[in-house]
Image (cartoon, rainbow, N blue to C red; front, top):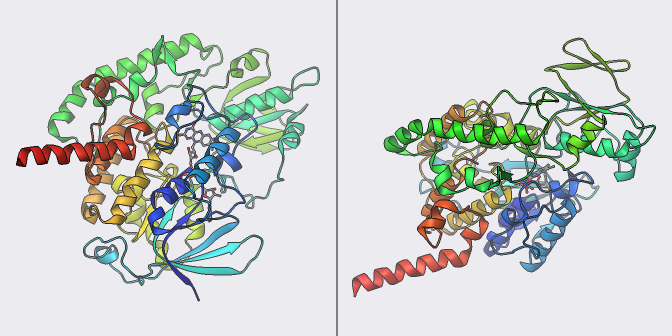
Length: 528
Ligand SMILES: Cc1cc2nc3c(=O)[nH]c(=O)nc-3n(C[C@H](O)[C@H](O)[C@H](O)COP(=O)(O)OP(=O)(O)OC[C@H]3O[C@@H](n4cnc5c(N)ncnc54)[C@H](O)[C@@H]3O)c2cc1C
């Protein structure tokens, strides 16, 4: 007999933890497949993996880091911070570790039409169970069933399901740090990919191959991306270019109206000028030309698709020592001694490491086997999702709700410069939605919004399939604030509103309550 509960949360990474804290009033149950909280920071990090976002931008609004310097914490420090968060807000009582959700079943029936999926009033908590959740605990194959009125999917876009040709799930050997070093030491290593994980791995490989018997590692690159050494460009802080209200004013955003569209068109030379300004610095600071690593697209396209990687300090010094080499190739395949590139070059390799990303869509589909939950595989729904790199999650209404998937929210699918901030704010929004502070727009409006966002992404970057809001994140937050009844302009002065960056600390409950109280006082004064 399934147990009936109000809210279920799947996953205990940063998104699941933020959801548990913000929805604590519903006494949620958090199912976490592994033996630890922390998600990618616990299970998808290398020895040297650090946060790329500065520490203070990757911080819960009500739980500051003890050390608030502009440094970059290691993955272990992030897990420790998350443990502190879970303890401080008494979240452990909600969390069930080693509990993998293996199946979801929608109880609303297969014939429910899109109009009544969310109920006529759009009431998210219908007062009856809507989802049945099958959970396997530990090594047991027995499926235990739970019933919930509402589900929050926080299973992450990265990790678990690698994008690999045709290898079995978790088919490779599980290696610890020493074993990984041993695997690369003295071996000819080929790394396929040129994003953050590939870059970090190349440095790991170079470190394991110091000394006489060391072998170089070769990165096989299909698409070049801009890499950044630190958050300062020609002496100016990086946030000035993209993270302030005035800088985001130059970029297109959804629901902007005719006038702003015109301003954005006129601002196009300014946007490309700013992009070229940043590129000029990167080409001066880094030996990109020497190694043939200058991308053929503007910097802003990488930024707008959340693909900018911060370089580990020693990356180019290792390349200068000959321990990291680069080869461009749009395709590659194996031969008996290694890999062949598209120009016919044969690279010898003892080890080939695929840093080719993860398949978020498959990951979602794996828990959603039942036919009733197949709605996000219908053409309409999949056209909502902005493509495979969006992680397969539906993107609508703040990237959290899909109009065709009832009583379910998705947190952690939209990306930005700080995914923690983006997830946390959506959890606050979701909490108010469930509390009944506001209603969802109509399904039609949600579809329109998503289509518009996709069009903007298409005009901004060739990598538009990634669901990234980094060039209009403040606008997204404004809309959520308005729906929640919060002030959307949250800085103390016009100057800081225009020129200081927006982060999680701007969205604390106190700030919101303060603004609401001020509004109340103003209303009272007007009445008197
Ligand atoms: C190497 C690396 C570096 C990164 N650097 C940055 C950065 O600098 N800045 C930034 O903003 N973002 C960065 N990110 C993105 C990062 O993914 C997010 O910041 C964030 O940690 C995602 O958290 P999440 O909770 O949404 O997902 P995850 O961390 O992936 O957590 C999902 C959780 O769900 C669990 N789960 C999955 N399936 C099931 C199931 N069926 N049943 C139960 N539990 C399940 C998983 O075990 C996991 O614990 C980085 C990612 C990686 C991989």
